[in-house]
Length: 120
Image 1: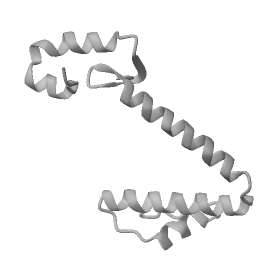
Image 2 (image 1 turned 45 degrees about the vertical axis):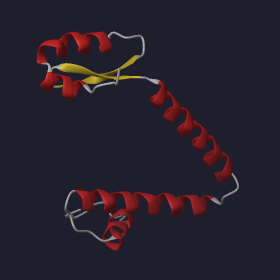
Image 3 (image 1 turned 60 degrees about the horizontal axis):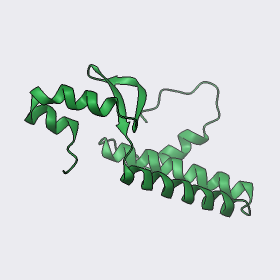
Image 4 (image 1 turned 180 degrees about the horizontal axis):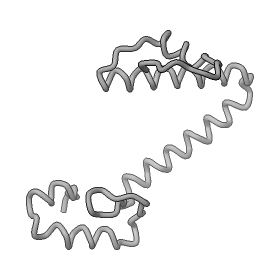
């Protein structure tokens, strides 16, 4: 049987939704979060696909840490700043906020105590 999202079950078969939710929620493979979605506590069911993705992430993280040991701290700092700027710029783009990397860098580099209210 193909796994079906709870959101689809909710609209497709509302009568069965609550029992399916409780069954998945109380599974030994469920990880519970400290917030709710609607009136239900949030959780994720750890299946083989998710477990494989977590394993891949951990392996990549280990390789990244090993590779970063030989990189000068200033290079890591600059790379981190570039990643932050890129992430903010892409997020703004998704949200329809026009911003340039230069504007974002200037805001990040602003060390003054009293910052004026900036649009970004």
